Each structure stands twice: as C-alpha cells, then as structure tokens.
Image (cartoon, rainbow, N blue to C red; front, side, top):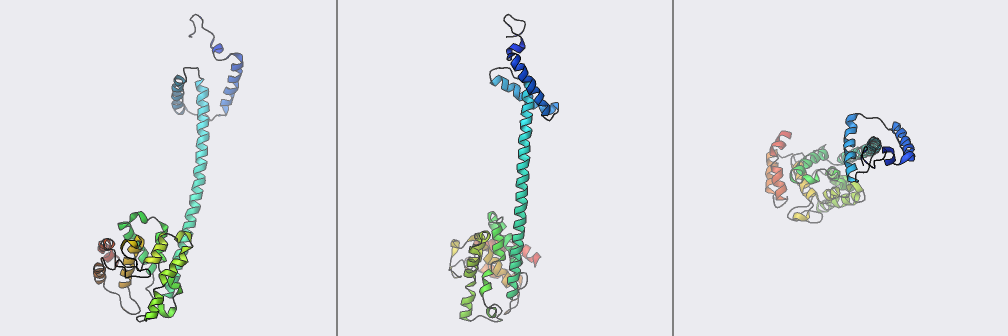
Length: 289
C-alpha cells in the first residue's frame, strides 16, 4: 500500500521492523569495504536490479545495497578470471619455451646427420622449407602440426645405421649395398616410434618418403592413397632437391630439367595432384634458385 492511504504502514514496518533496521545498518557498513565505482559503472547494475524487482513479484529491494554487492561479486569474479588467465599464460609460455627447445634439438640432430652423408650441406633445412610450402598448398590442415616439420627435418634419421662406406660411396651401389640403404626408412621409423612428438606425421614421413605412387617404392611397396599424404608431399620435394644439387656420382641437373622429371613422374613416381601443385610453384622455385 502507498503512504497516505487507509491502512498504510510506515516504511520501516514494511521491511521488517527494528531487527531489520539493525541488519540493514550492518549491511550498509559492509558496503564501505566494496571498491567505489562511478555512476556510469553502477547504472547497468541499477537497471538490472530494478528489472529483477519486477520479476520477483515487486517485493521491496534495497537497490544501492544490491548494486554494491553485485559490483563486489563482479570484481571478485573478474579477479579470479585475471588470475586464471595469468596462470594459463605462464603455462603457455613454458610450453612455447619447451617447444622451441625441442625444435632446436631436432634441427641440431638433422644437421649432425648431414655430417655423415655426402649430400649438399643444408639439405634438411632446404627440403623442410619447400615441403612446408607445398603442404600449405595441397594440405593446409597439416601445416600447423609441429610433427610434420620434425618429420621433414629427420626424414633420413635411419641413415644413422648405414655404414659410411655405403653413404659416401662415389659410385652406384651394389645390390647388397642398395638393400642396406633401402632399410633406412624402416630403421628411422623404429627410432621415432617411441617418441611422442614424433609418433604421428613425423613417423609417416620417415617411414614412407621413398614409396612411389605406382607401388614400386620401398620399403613396403605402398601405392596410391595408401601412402600417407605427408610422405607423398615430401617425396616430390626430396627427389627435386636431389636432382638440383650435386651428388658424389653426378652433377646437379638444371632446374628446368628437374621440373620436367617431376612432370614425367606424375601418376607413376608421384601423386599426380601433389605433383601438379608442385609444378605450380615454378616461379617461386626459379626465384629461390
């Protein structure tokens, strides 16, 4: 009822009498501990609480007290959120440092492997850059996986078990030597299989980068789509790099000749779709040569 009308009661009776007054004084005293905010900050809370009054049936609400309590709750919630974000950021920073350290270790290992081989220096880094570029062209969903880059860098890890006399031989390999050389993808796969960051795309590249589209590759004679995509991508880049750099038994081919060889290998040695995409990078390849 409204004051001034028959049957109206004093406002303090309406909210609960003297006991309620003491309770309100204690509550209002507690408001001094709430960080003060400007009217602009309180306005949204004031409007929300007045709307809430209608929802709960018009029962009287101390708007200022409710606003103060709501702001205090919101600020406490904001503090918790900030703490959680800071903690998550610290964890992310630690993970980034760990990943950078791991990547550095992988690159150092790849460089050490090249010291045993007579391939042109920088082969691993060179093919990794080009293979990542080709991946972004034909399978962009794979490009963000660190394991893919590790696999490109460590594709010849299995050569660690091949004798120097075979790796460094200046001429064609004898049949038994060729058999040993063809074992390096299998050995490499065994080496990476027990390492979690490498037991995914990296393992696929290491194990299958010498397979051929027509099934005449090694070590498993896989063919077509049964060859992992990452390995199909890398096999073209690896072959192209081998053709365009000197080897102990031959000189590098001109870039145009190497591109013709890639085109000739579509559908036999190479995945035709991936090979076509690689040939589409000719301008970039010539600029990088």
